[in-house]
Every structure is written in C-alpha cells, then in structure tokens.
Length: 262
Image 1 (cartoon, helix red, strand yellow):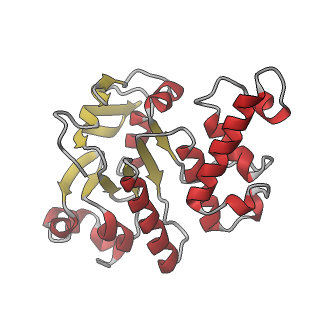
Image 2 (cartoon, one colour):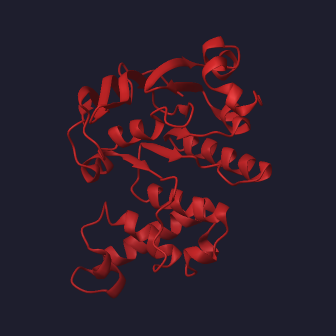
Image 3 (spheres, helix red, strand yellow):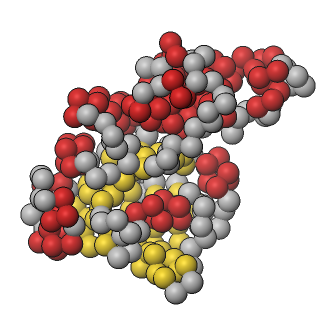
C-alpha cells in the first residue's frame, strides 16, 4: 500500500443510513489508501453490506459524505460510480446463467466501450474494432483469473470457486481502481482460500485497492493490511490484524461467535 498521495483513495465521513426507523449505518468514517487490502468484519446485521451499497451508489446516505479519488460520489447512481473506477461482487454472485462465461465478462466491458452487448455479440451497428476490443479485453480478464479455457462454457458448469473468479473477472473488465468483494471465500477449501489470497495480492501488484467482507479468519488475518470491525452499524475497531486479535471490544462483540478461531 502507499500513502504518498495527500488524500486517500476512498474517504467516508460521518456516513449514516436509516431504513425507516432502523439505523443501518451510524456515523461511519474511514479512509482507504491506494493499494491497500482492507477487510471488513462484524456479526450478521452489523452493516457491512450496507456500507458497500452506500459507497457503490445502491442506496443514498441519510447523511454524510463519500469521496473517491477526491470527488464526491454519495449522490451518484451505481453506473456513474462504476464508471469512476469502483467495482463490486455480490454474495450471491449474480452471474447471467443464459450467457457464456466470456459473455458474462463482456457485460463488464460494455461499461467502458461505446457499443451495446447486442451489438458486440451480433456484430451489428458499431465497428468490428469495438467487438474485437471487447472480446480481447474479456479474454484477458479470464486469463488473469485462470478461466480462459472455459470461455465458451456456461456459469452453471463451473465450480463454486470458478464462479467466484468469473464474478471477479467481470468486475475487472470495468478497469476498477477499487474493488469490493462480498464474502469471496464462502464455500471454499483452505487451499482455495490460499489461491484466492495470492490472487488478491496480484491485484494489488497491478495497482488495485481491495476491500472485502469476510468471515474466514485465515484469509482475513493472512492478507489484510487493516481490519475494520463493524457492530450495530458503527466502527468499533480499525487496526492491523495483530492488534485486532487482541482487542477486547472486538473479542466481546464478534469473535466469540466464531469460537475465537484465530
């Protein structure tokens, strides 16, 4: 990670969100710097996914500000946020089962080229150079995650690990500066988690910043530069992994639910 710049890549200030009478985020403030790998942990219902939804434009905040690369984004639509360089996966992946693996990635490429998915796939309207560009970029992202040989298969033929990698490849097709991963290690074996962790390091080497929500402690403690702990919509700790393991507030609020498997 680097803090050579005078400002963080992502700056969240006093972010609060109400859904009716329910306060899902409570005065959350955090900074994330270029090329950091940051994990967000907390009990179920702590506000982790709500925070991602606020940053990516799914929900507008009730109050507070979100700045990305020095620009206010807290009132922008998700497509605008994505266009500025923020991408995300979902816990349920949201792959298109009726599209091939490469076509799923082309959906991501479409955010950055001036041709529709139909035009790209049917060679109608726009020039063939855009079609070629979209296909080449999609295959490049599939190669990065190791799925190029399955480009013309379909998501339902992939393993759980491969489906997660496909969702990441689709994000990478938008050329993000910051990528959110929502429980990327869910359902993976220990060996697969090690492979995913190495891949996240590869993303950082390519200049990306990664923020991920996770429950698998071997991944959290193994690759995080910092761990942010949420409880009842509030940040109760923001520190390096070693100190998080010793934080009594965190242990009381969260880790007993995991039987303190650190």
